[in-house]
Length: 524
Image 1 (cartoon, one colour):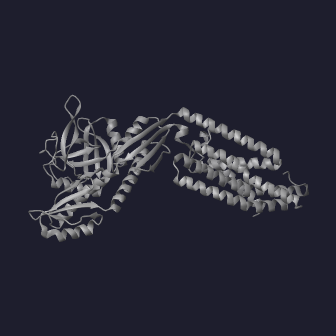
Image 2 (cartoon, rainbow, N blue to C red):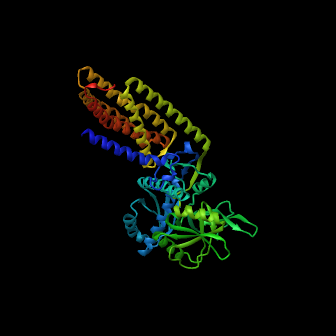
Image 3 (cartoon, helix red, strand yellow):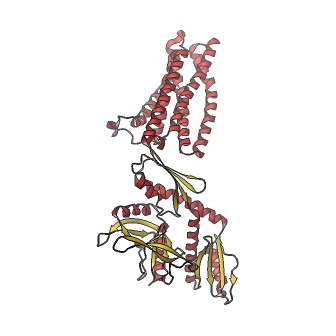
């Protein structure tokens, strides 16, 4: 490629990088209309904010899925005129149900094999009256799939909640032991953020057992006592209510949730189910007319209305003497998606903005000192060629800023360390090229021939060494946590930028300089 085209491409890249780097600089708000909207965001350690570690109880998601599977088995059996009694979950991992007519065993086995291959039903036990008792559980592969799906869904749900909460550039990632790490830079109301994220909003519908005293020390099998919020005229109080353990429907099937107000101007939340949830809700209400259904949110019963008739259309409501703000926040978490399993806040840390500002100041000082020492050394040792290397260093920093700004990357304290490291590495390629040019000049080459030979022979070594570093940075980005990934991003951008400026841009400048000077040589 000719020198002219190299210079044209270099100027075009410079202009493009300048456009994407300017929005991240202070005092550029007047140019917001013409500059790109994306810019560099500051991470938690620089801007301040909140750090949370959440634990997901994936075993609850498996138990809920098992309970819904039991309801589906009974529904499909009814469609084939087979009676299945009392499907219930025992111990969170085992589904029990009874087939009263043994002659229907073959038909039921066909239904289980065709529609529920993930269920290991085994051989049923025959009772004294001739009925068959089935004890089934999910296969190991299905349990692993449900646990992974619960964790992934919890991750998506939390991300949706944060998006609706309005946090810019959150860092949300899975960790070992079914944990999720959440970092929210620049959060001005940490308490409300913890409330929205920590509120599981795990919504369940259970049938009420009015024939059971919830105050008994020992409850019948398949029954549990839950606290119910009730308004006695003087405020809210809790009382116990007995419900069946088996879940009839969960919040996973909620399609939309909105705050609303009744005739007494009391806030409540309306629910719209998706098609699957609407069908289940209609079937459950149709089968249990006259009974009460408890609407359970995070282990508390908010209301337990009597089912007067089959309810179609997939609509329901949650009332519980909410304030307007509580109804709005509840609608947010339900609309963003009910978590598939309870989530607990295991760790909470708040990073103050003053600490972040100290980190920024220290990082900037380190970058300025490092860059100054490198610039002075190159100018003194290599003369005019050293000044060209210093200009290429500034160009490299511009590429790093533009790359981070274009992708809306988050700058963290380790990211600043990556920039400081890039400053030292950026001139390394120039040093290899300059020493090679010096060697060619000592061998009697003309300045232009020495420049071409120096760049050609040094480019192979530069490419090999930088590629290995990029591979290491890619591994850090793939398997590292937030701060480590920030270091990997800035290091990778710095390496790519330094290779471009040293091998491509610097060569164009040197060849142009050697041709203009002719026999007078170059300062190196």
